[in-house]
Length: 234
Ligand SMILES: Nc1ncnc2c1ncn2[C@@H]1O[C@H](COP(=O)(O)OP(=O)(O)OP(=O)(O)O)[C@@H](O)[C@H]1O
Ligand SMILES: [Mg+2]
Image (cartoon, rainbow, N blue to C red; front, side, top):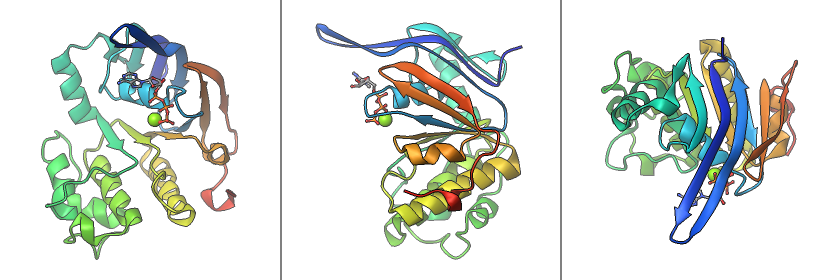
C-alpha cells in the first residue's frame, strides 16, 4: 500500500523555444495522512513545481503521483479540474483574494462549488476573524488577508492543504501566527498539510521535512518531536 501522498521518480521539463529546463529530475517522497510536511530548499530548486503537480495545477512528464490511493498523474484535464476543485486547498504567498468581495464572500465563493463544504462563517471564526467577516481585503492587514485565504482553502474541506510560502509577504511575528494556525489546523482536524518555505528555521516544526535541491530530493526526514512555533527563532 502506498502512502497518502506518493511521489515516485517525477520528472518535469519546461520548454521555452530551443531551451529545455529540467525543473524536477526524478523526485520521490511520501507524506502520510494527517502529517504537517515542510518542503524546503533554495530559490529555483523546484518547490513550487512539486506543489503545482501535487495540486493538479500542472502535470509531470515522467513518474507517478498518487494521492489517497488515486493516480493523479494519470488524470485527464477534466479529472484534474474536479480534483483541484474538490480535493485541494491552496494558500499562496500573496493571498489571491477577490478584491470586490468581502472576507465572508471570498470564502463562500470557494466553498459553494464543493460537494462537502464547511460553513464559511464558522471557518472564519476558527481562524480568528469573527469581527472582520464583512471587511473587504483592502480593509484587512496582510496577516488577516492570509487568514481569509486559509479559511477559503479550509472551507472546501479538502483532502490536502497546500501552502506555497504562506508567510513570505508577512513580518516575522505575523508569519508565526499564520504558521501556528496551519499547525493547529493540522493537529485538530487531522488534515494533511504541505508547506513550502526557503527558511530552514521552520523545518523543526514539521512532522516531515523534504529538502529539495536542483530538482532532486536531497534529504527526507521525520521529526519524532516537532517543535511548537513559539520555540522557533529566526
Ligand atoms: N512555467 C515555467 N516555465 C519555464 N520554466 C519554469 C516554469 N516554472 C518553473 N520553471 C523553472 O523550473 C525551476 C524550478 O522552479 P520552481 O518555481 O519550482 O522553484 P522554487 O523552488 O519554487 O523557487 P522559489 O523559491 O524562487 O519560488 C526553475 O529553474 C524555474 O525557472
Ligand atoms: Mg516557488
